[in-house]
Image (cartoon, rainbow, N blue to C red; front, side):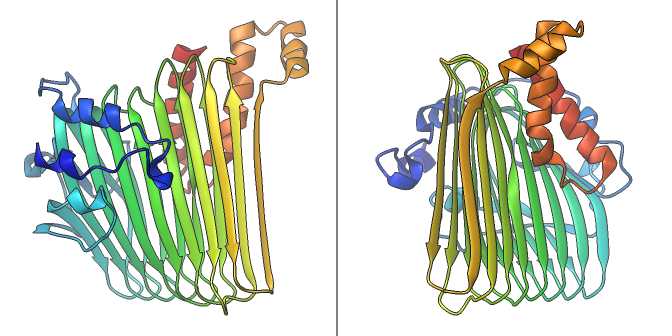
Length: 361
């Protein structure tokens, strides 16, 4: 199929850990019923709901509210994002408007699907949303975000496909005193690439993008995020956790760029990996590129195993070994999910992580 001819290759530095073979296999998988009831994928929240099945909007089982469905071709140079053209969704809020607990579910049955999305929040507008990927196949998504002065957006994204590949690309422009927080959890059986390009264009802007990758068997998952500071007094956080079991691979690449004149920038990266078996692999790549002299930027990157003393302590108190490992592993990823605003959403993400632990340990 023609879209596969435009894929990047691992020979490119930015795609060195990408599992393009899994992407191709997912795109070529024949479609078959998933056996999943789409309604089961929505959380028990009151708010707008969108359902896409194999990339096609399902109006009968959706309640769009302030969201609109339209066909459009986004402007982007990202090699996978360029493919996400066609029927997609748009959220546009006027000044001081609010739209919370928005849910968007993507259910795949094989093959490939591409959906573009656009979020535009005017001054002091507020929105929160949960996006869920389930089923199988190659789900390719591009989300373009523009936040005006004082706007605030909270995004929580669950990758729980049983197989296949999920690729997401977020491109954001964050204005003066605006805030974007995006939290991802990859806890399914698919391969994935979470890709972000965030630009802080206004004074005092804030951006946070992070989450947890949970891999097992021979899975490969990665996150690659670049945050660019172009204005003064901006702050950014990239907090990622990776847990790898069996012979799987989890890769995290986080980059912060501070432009000339972006004084008093505060940028932080925290990349930590946990190996449940020594046959697994975690790759970490923090980067800082700073062209201003009055900044506070820091990064930390560590890979290790479960603390044997903590395991011994729990087992000596009667906690079975697998349960003790699960408790310590959940604690390891908990801070990556703590930024989710709604309690029900945070609890759903924790339940996804617990289900993954039940199969991995």
